[in-house]
Picture 1: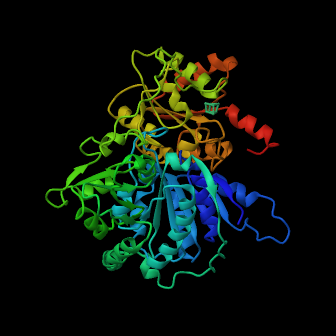
Picture 2 (picture 1 turned 135 degrees about the vertical axis):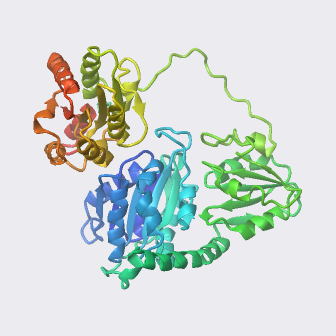
Length: 542
Ligand code: SF4
C-alpha cells in the first residue's frame, strides 16, 4: 500500500476507514477535530473508476458530544461499525451514554476516539480520559505514533466486537497534531445491516441492567487477559541492571527512548499502551528493580494505581512526587531529572520580547458586538456578563474586557439565570450559535420556565469558527425558530448586525433588552470573516 503522511488524527480516521466503518459522528474540539474533517474530505473525494467507493460512510457533526455518542450507538445497534470523536472535555458531555454503553452488548464495532490536551493548548482543563475508560470498565488503547494509531484503530474495532464493549482510543495533542508516514493495510468490508439479536442487552431497565452489570464485571478478567497477552504492552527486563525500571505509557516511551543512549546500562522497561493495566507484567518488572520511574503523558493514571502497591524496598518516582513535571506536556528534556540524567543546556531565550496575546481577527463581528455591549453597560452601576467557549471568549481580554465567566459549553446561560434568580440586574449571557445549539438551548428552556430576568446574546456567525469553521448543525433561520420554539416572547427576540455603522442602534437594543424584566434574546448576526474567505476560496461552500 502507498505510504501516506498523516496527522495522528488523520491516521486514526484512516484506520477507521480501513476497519470498514459505516459512519462517524463527532463534535468539533481541538485537538480531535481533524478526525472528522479527514473523513469528510475522504468521503467527498473523486472516486477513480473501478475503485471501491469510499463515500459509503456517513460522516456528520452533531449538536454535541452526547448526541454524537447516542447516534453512534444506534449505528452499532444495527450491526455496523461506527466511530465517535470528541476532545476530553467533550467526553464529560457524553458521559451519560458513554458509561451506560459499557453495559450494553455492543454489536457493530464501536470505537470512541478521545483527544486529550495536556498543557491546555486550547482547553479549560487537563483531564486524562484513561480515568473515564477505567470508570466505565472498558478497554482503552493509547498509541504513541501515527502508524500505531492507524493499526490500533483497526484493532479497537476488532476488540469491540470480540468483547461486545465500546473501546476507547486516547490521543494527546502532540500526537493528534503531528505528521508522520503511515503505511495503510487492506480495507475491510463493511458489516451487514443486522439488528441486535437480543434487545434486552440494550435495555437498561434495573432488572436487566443488573444482569448486564454482572456480565461486564465478569468480563473484566477477559479484558485483563487480553492486555497481559497483548504484545504492545511490552516488557523488557535487563537482568544486568537491578537498579532502575521505567514504566512508560503513550508518548512517554518516545521521550524515554530519546534518552536511552545515555544510560550506561539499559534499564528494564515496561511500556503500556492497552488498559486495563497488565498487573502481572508490572509485578515482573518490580521484582527485578529497586526503583521504578513512571513516564505518562497526562495524569499519573498508572502511577496512582500502582504507588503503594510496590514491593518493600522499591522506590517510586513520577508525577505524584514532582520528580516528573505534574502538569503540562512531557518532553525528552523535562523527564531527564527523574531518569537521573543531567539537565540539558538549552538555548537562552531573548528576554523582554513583546507579549503577543491571542486576539479576535481584524473585522471579526464579535468585536463590534462587544463594543456595543460595553457601551450599553455604562448605563448601569454594575452588571454581569457570563460567557462561554468559542472565539468570543477572547472578549475577556483587552481591549474588550467584556465578559466575566468562562466555565464550560453552555454554562453562560445557566449562570446568567442563576445570577438573575439571586436578584442581580442586569445580567447578560453571551455565547456563539454553535455553543447555543450544543448545550445553551437547554439552559434557555430553564430560563424561560423560571421567567428569569436576563438577556441572552447569541453571536450567530454561521459557523463553528474556533475549531476551523465547521458547519453548524442548524442555520441562522433555524436558530430563530429554536429560540421562538422554547417560548421566548417574540417581541423580545431582537436581531442586530454587528457593524460599526450600526453601533448606536445596537447599544439601544442592548439597553432596551437589559431593562426588560424577563427573558430576552438578542441575535448578533454577521458571518465570521474567516469562514467567508474560506467559502470564497472553495467556490462558495465552506
Ligand atoms: S475566526 Fe471568525 S469568529 Fe473567530 S475571531 Fe476570526 S473572524 Fe472572529
